[in-house]
Image (cartoon, rainbow, N blue to C red; front, side):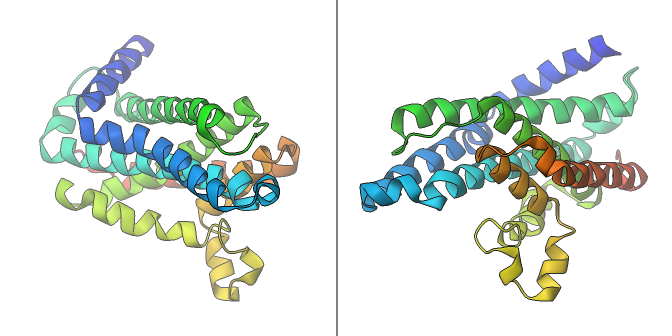
Length: 249
């Protein structure tokens, strides 16, 4: 089983990298946003403000990390829809590989690509970012992988109900990107109306942003155990739901 999982994962990575636009959007674009926006804002702010700017120091890295996670999810939704429409999922289901193995391979591919994009962002940041940041690289990467892992489960639900590959990415974007506005990244949750606060509390991106911000600021993991628990709960619920509604053909 593990041998088949690793072979399928490696195959999916090679297939993904053969599509230049997909690789650019998922790997290169978030790094460019991080560097270009950071340098643009850094050049416009006085040096004293750069060191204390919450957005440049915390907001922008977290925002780019969220983009990395969401691009991985949208890529997953699109690929699964293409595979279903082309009959590939039907053929894979007929192989000795279990359905769980096939889905796990897709998750592993997105987690690997997330880690690679995060590593490139760190390397680019050390060379081109306008302020010096002492980033807990391992902890922040783990927080991003946990967040991506949770949000990927929402991608499986979307991929389960999207009828065709043509509409997969637009529908996924319409569902996922509005979550950024309610995540607390740009507008503090207490400033939102009560109804939107209640909605934000059930969205995984809210807990992902809280976890990423806390780890980036050097806070202890124990202080964000609630965020990790919420992201895990989202994964469990969405995985169970997608197992019920997922269509292989």
